[in-house]
Image 1 (cartoon, rainbow, N blue to C red):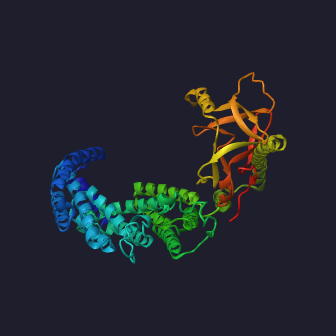
Image 2 (cartoon, rainbow, N blue to C red):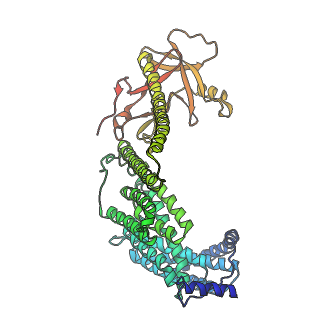
Image 3 (cartoon, rainbow, N blue to C red):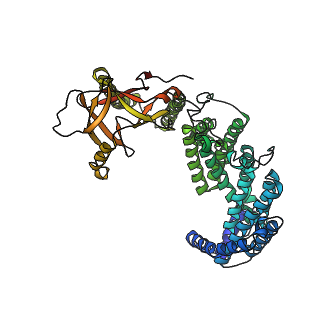
Length: 564
């Protein structure tokens, strides 16, 4: 430590920024992540063939008790011994690989001996924490913190029997994640005061991994909420609109876990106000802005699995300067919002109403904030000056609003008019189809349509659309006595239509040629009666415009969505 460093530490101690016992520890420059990654990959090529041959020669030692437990212990102890000494980067990577293999073998041994009980996870968690406190490589400590946090959030107290699926389908355990997030936040807040402790550096690196694990588990939960445990056997999704419970969930359901998440959001908001001293009279604007943001997060907490944990981690990361962790928290919040939208436990109409209500609330609130601070910070002007400003600005703003409203309504109504014209004047025809999976996570329930066009027609259309540059075409179809259309040929420029023939417009969607559309939409959860659909009912005008208006069964009887 040179004189400049000593002077900087003394000045910080004089100002009270650092405690009197604080010292400056100079670390050796760490290699870049590129070098570390490449070295780790090279170590895998060196160690895994050796471990594979060793496992083949002594499978009983590796995969049977007590040999597997002994081998796991030897690998972990040897790896820890190597990581506590100053080795080259490549040797460190070999030790890390041996450590991961040892931990995996330990988990296998404990699962075999303890029948997959929670005691297995508790022991594994204790070992991971102990190893993290003993090794002296920061990135390995972060990795162990990540693994230990994931292990802790898998523990499900009260689980009975050999229930391995609970480790994943019910991960993360919400209460475990909340307690771990609180412990992590307490450490981060008190880290400057605790930095003089001997193990503080080890705990700091370990805590970095824990923070990433908390956010990663929330990201996993936002995706896994879409997939139920029977997704592979039934092909359905949890919360899907074709579920028997679709549309039955109340808008705001206060459970114990939801209340816990809301409390975390409120606690994070209050702590940040105190931490930044926003109750000061000169920081009213910052206080209002922060309160608005956390008010939105509080509403958001009603809809997420563990949104309060993400808000708490993001808040502490914001206040303690952990920029990368803050960015990750924002990404996870966006993913959770997407997960809420895609989960169709609520009808889309209700979700749209909630989003519109939140948007209106924010618009009014932001307008009030803007008005308040514009008047409170603007210089005093005469009544004539203020009146002239209002006269100059108000008509232009109103003109823009009215123009936008007229344009939006005009485009929508023109589209509706054109479709009503097709329905009113178009010829009724039926086209054979084969329904596919009725589900759309983004748009609600729908019947995916697959038209039964002749194979040679589709081949001709594909040949006429090389490179997918041409996505529209016209075909000639003939109607039978029932009005069912059969495609005959691709329409030519001067094609003369025979009696009973008409022009149908096709377009290419998702590598298939369809008539008008490839889907028929219906209200959520009301598509069971449409499973008998065999024909699509269309209206077609002489100029080739067409519109799908309904579905029909084998006898051409119209089918309608049935309310549950």
